[in-house]
Image (cartoon, rainbow, N blue to C red):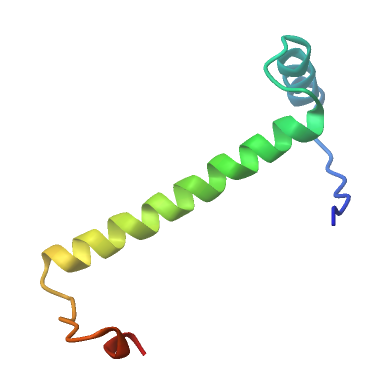
Length: 71
């Protein structure tokens, strides 16, 4: 199910978005926005992994003896 979200952007941003869509890089303005949201989510996930990796390097981890230990 899709939801409609309306946003307001300055004129220069709107021109940039239209230019990218017109160039053929994106099928529509919606696809452009979905692409930006995917990038944002990817960066959030990468930051979470970076923090977990740093915690692991510092020895902040738990040795599991079985899958039941995950609970």
